[in-house]
Length: 303
Ligand code: ADP
Image 1 (cartoon, rainbow, N blue to C red):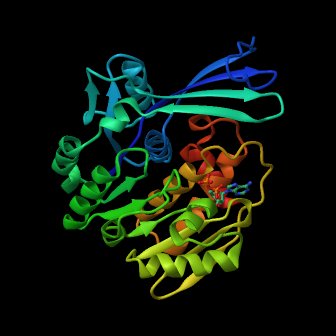
Image 2 (tube, helix red, strand yellow):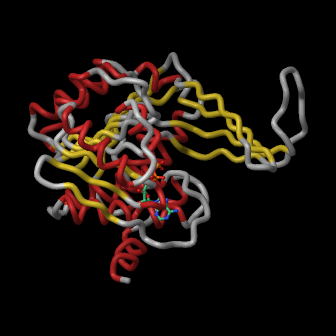
């Protein structure tokens, strides 16, 4: 199986004619409640693509916990190792979207912010059953490091999506990571120079290799993907699709990438699968709603 250790959120989305100013009350129009969190998104991406997937993390008993668990189970994700925290709310993103497309977001980490060594111990018990561990940065970094270290000592492939963009990561984390998968913004934060396009991405990937990862994959949105290892550097163009909404394209990418590696394919083929899943996600609205299922994915790859 593949294990995802990370965030589980509920997104509360309101649409309004404009963003409210300080102290202002506005009448909005629509309200949506949708499951999210990069960890949960990546777990759903994997399960939809047919990979046996286990999620490790926390939801809050006080709000949305049962609902978030159910959502993951409905997607086919194994949730036995998600801890229901009695004293916390679930992770919540309060999002306002204005007519002009601008948004305003307050994220309450809630239970995600309480993930710690106890959760890493639960994770460690199931690591021997897994081939890969997917990590992101929406839970506390010390827990991410401990998880990566535990996976490395079990010889399990560690795939780190360094999102949201950190200003800096502890050097030891890099040494436990097999594959790091930043987008342009995240890559720029990690290497300290702007990453915009293929040339800069090649340089950034080189810097990330020097920091100690085995492979660096820089996601360039509709411009494609750069992948570097100590043996080779290659570019994979983006699939040409009718783009509607790129939310969760990065999560879909990591799902496609890990699915290919789980199936025993090469890193090069895995990057192509990642790009295909990312492109499919860009053709649909929303986060988890846009993640492709196995049939759609296989049909797209055959085109
Ligand atoms: P993130 O969502 O993390 O910012 P990207 O936007 O770079 O990441 O998207 C991840 C991957 O998904 C890209 O590298 C690309 O392969 C694919 N992708 C994203 N947007 C598009 C698009 N508009 N057209 C085709 N492929 C896309």
